[in-house]
Amino acid sequence: MRSRNPVFSREGSFTRDQQYAGFGTQTAGQPGQHAYGTPYAGSPYAGSPYAGQPYADQPPLTDDQLAGMYNAPSAGPLQTGRMTMDDVVARTAMTLLTLVAFGAVAWFTVPMDNFVPAIGAGLVAMVVGFVISFKRSVNPGLILAYAALEGFFLGAISKAFETLWPGIAIQAVLGTSAVFAATLFAYKSGRIRVTPRYTRIGISIAIGFVLLMLVNMVAMAFGADFGLRSGPLGILVGLVGIALGAFFLTLDYAEIEEGIRMGAPEKEAWRAAFGLTLSLVWIYMEMLRLIAILRGDD
Image 1 (cartoon, rainbow, N blue to C red):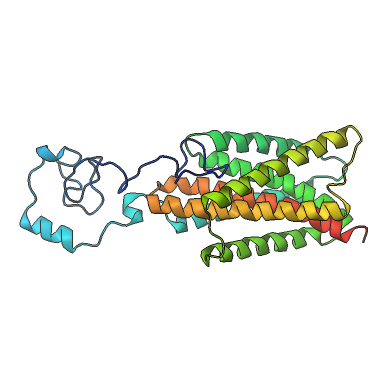
Image 2 (tube, rainbow, N blue to C red):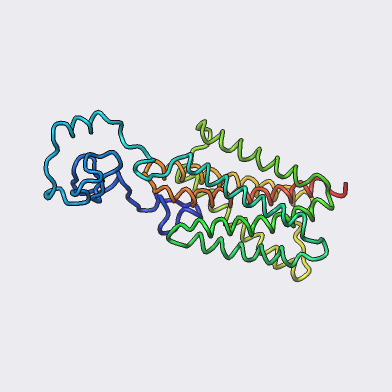
């Protein structure tokens, strides 16, 4: 399946026209051997002088070797170096913990009268995010750097909102967690199915939403205000923004499942963690804005 997720759809992602061990075209190999010629751990040829040689250059297996091979457990993801759900969970946890840690640093160090460091971190995070999105190979260091920069920015912004509306930060965190849990439940229970039609409609709405926000930002720079971030219209826009974040999460879930099914390399778990982090950051920012509108001047 070719992804339409903004993070997973570029060249080099784990679901885009890729073939991994056990899938796609392979060359004939000795039993217990990858198509690329390197035996997996536990293979009768592992560590032998014939490891990595073409099939024709290797001697036939003995009866004892055959018996040992077929009585042994099958090679799992750990032996073949494929991505598992545990890998995705672990990398996502590392990414989010980095984001939260640097958010805490900003919360306690950035003064309310000087947001230049936070804005700078946000702009650099945006650039790093684009680099990661279009980079062919996965770079865990870049992903963690993005999480640190984005976390610093979010920490400062959250502190500013907290000054105006005490308790809003924890409300936004709880709201984001609720959206994540509800979306995951709906996806795993089959209530949401990521079909091509579902994806096309969602992406079209997302493009329109982003363009509308950009137009609103330009208008505000020139003194105009369409009211998209205040009043009843602001509430509607906030709900649409959160719904779009949930939509991106469902694409993330589908792409992760597809990557695991296709036997994506273990390192691709970092790409999955980056995609999930982007979606959660989107939801958190929209949640902050929506709660601020709902609370008004209280």
